[in-house]
Length: 340
Ligand code: 5GP
Ligand code: MN
Image (cartoon, rainbow, N blue to C red; front, top):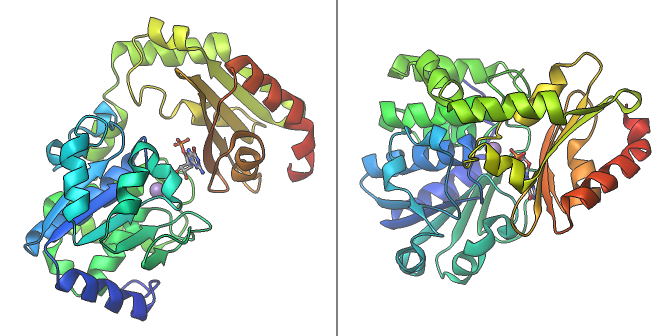
């Protein structure tokens, strides 16, 4: 048995909301990661088994290394299927918003979701959930939204409806949001849940390989280049930075998701507790921040890069040049010494 984290009242509300409807849209944040895909597809499989008509819509494409996930082939990418997605959102009777806390994280899809008439149920684990959903299932102490989906389904009395595909998706999200259970993963109930998922039949070792060990040669070379040529270490500040220009990314045939995990690598250096990765995009710089211990990656992201996230894993973006973003970061480093 796992403890009843989600309030009883919320369980009833969600149950009631699902009961009367068929057409359900599931939306996640831009740049969907393993947890966004895991939670949305897990919910999709569950809703299919209870004979609803769910559709997962993601604002932008998901990385190739998640393409194997059961149900991924049915996911609509808003960018590429705007008309169909708009129609689905318009006609939806219920919308699940998963793995994000504010509507801005939907980016190009924000208007369509916010203009829809269907009530929104938010299921998320980010701090400070925005005030945009009718039902808010927000538990920042839980390591992944996928874990919350497991808890939600179980509490609705439907553990038996979690099929293998659903279980695989839940596991993927739980695994990726904890870096393969290497951070934010000391809650023992995580392992009780994993044990249940294994009983359902998941092959956790195979899922690990499919997510982490299917690099292209170019992706591997990009990592080598980034670490060898581009990583800067600031020993005084226990920090590290890797910043890659669009040109460099292009040279390595950069594909969506190819830099995933790169930000974590400098944290393997003895004495480094804060790592930042910057990637130059067409009109902005995308920033990923990771930390260990009490150093607040989310505060730095909010202060400098219009972002947020969790204490140890945050992100943001900046509409300045890459060079300016690097300068901004370097100039600000001293300000965070007190957190070391
Ligand atoms: P990642 O570095 O993997 O893109 O993001 C790590 C975490 O930072 C995400 O789970 C999310 O919580 C947060 N995050 C990433 N990008 C943004 C952003 O642009 N704005 C905000 N507020 N949070 C972000
Ligand atoms: Mn998440």
